[in-house]
Amino acid sequence: MRPLILITNDDGVAAKGLGTLCEVAGEFGDVVVMAPERNASGKGLSLTSERPLRVYEVRKDGGISVYACDGTPVDCVKLAVEHFCPRKPDLILSGINHGSNSSINVLYSGTMGAVIEASVMGFCAIGFSLLNHSHEADFEPSVPYVRHIIDRVLVQGLPEGVSLNVNIPRLPAADIKGIRVCCEAKAMWKDSFEKRVDPIGRPYYWLTGKFLCDNPPSDSDETALREGYVSVVPIHSDYTHYAAIDKINNMMQ
Amino acid sequence: MRPLILITNDDGVAAKGLGTLCEVAGEFGDVVVMAPERNASGKGLSLTSERPLRVYEVRKDGGISVYACDGTPVDCVKLAVEHFCPRKPDLILSGINHGSNSSINVLYSGTMGAVIEASVMGFCAIGFSLLNHSHEADFEPSVPYVRHIIDRVLVQGLPEGVSLNVNIPRLPAADIKGIRVCCEAKAMWKDSFEKRVDPIGRPYYWLTGKFLCDNPPSDSDETALREGYVSVVPIHSDYTHYAAIDKINNMMQ
Image (cartoon, rainbow over all chains, first blue to last red; front, side, top):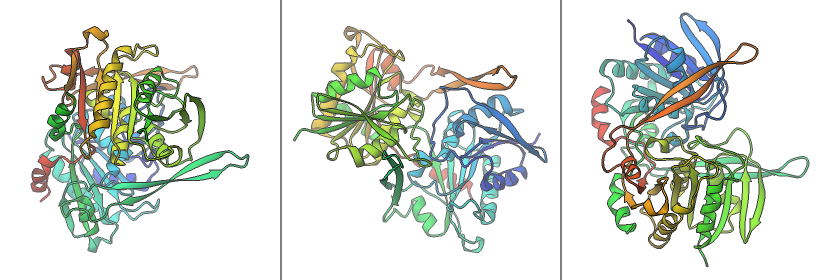
């Protein structure tokens, strides 16, 4: 039996990057897609418990069932695995995201929220992102790398508790130098809320922000991407800061 | 000048646990509150970028400014620091949550999303949760522990990149045995979506779930809580699985 590959994203079911990922995944196995019906960027691991979820089948393309859900990427993974996959998935993919999920962006990313959820549920999972926010981004240069990484993971599996955060530089195919496995760079968003006033005089606040990551370490994803490599960061889902346990224990006395 | 303490939560601005946290924090410093206007449980590190945010001042109690925001806990932290705090906060608190945020619940928790955001922004931050979901939960037994931990952190600070996830067992004051610094337990939610049919025949899906954590290790938060201790887990914000880098590097060849 061919592998079953479940695919989601956070840009929504109509996103171009989702289509590219489906095409590549279809070379390897049977594909089921469940994605948010609209943009769910920045939803992290948000899930929906205060209301029920709706699902509708968008299309059936050459054997690929594509469902839209009015929840988050995490909801899509949970619900698709239980109710919409004909068997247990062998691999769960998310993306290809329109825009970077390198460095600390993994914290907020709905694309990566789905991957972390899948990993906690015990599945092999990979998130793919291209460093181009445009709706019309060119995903063709990403294809050989997406294909290679899916192949490696289907053949070899992933260590328990490990999933992958893959980011692809915005470069022509000939200028991408290869794959580099690395750690996430420390960084921060210098946020700034732009205060505006509505037509009846009440204030509102638009989030804007500037990504700050000066001098990232040589073994980080930011460096890899700036040097023209596809970055692959193995990720876990344990927030414990083990090295700080003794120090905090002393503090608490 | 007294320390400035910014407080948020995910249960919403009207939650009882938020009130308790404000009272205790007020013993130590000047307090500003910005919390979601309604329940934002399960929002993780979700943030709002596709629409602007609204804020209104709910009340001014004895010098405490309390603001409600129509965004997520992460939005509250970002926006309050920039526009609603009279100076840079010395400490950012979240809670007291109505319900547990131990183990993997930290991944989905809006309460802890705010804490992780605050830590990424460079602030000392602590999340407090009581293992009682009730709106009318009794927070009195929590108070001495909340007070002690705030005191320790204000006096000694926290190591860079470390914040605290504090969970308090649902026990009478006399039965709480003390504080234990620990790691988060591995666990999973056995989710199950209950499929129902609306009055015009269309299906919808309600998320239900069962928290599974059998035989947690002795040094974990789940064990501490089951044995009657307040659990304190030091947390970080780096998803890199460092130990897997070499293995994934070999796989990618």
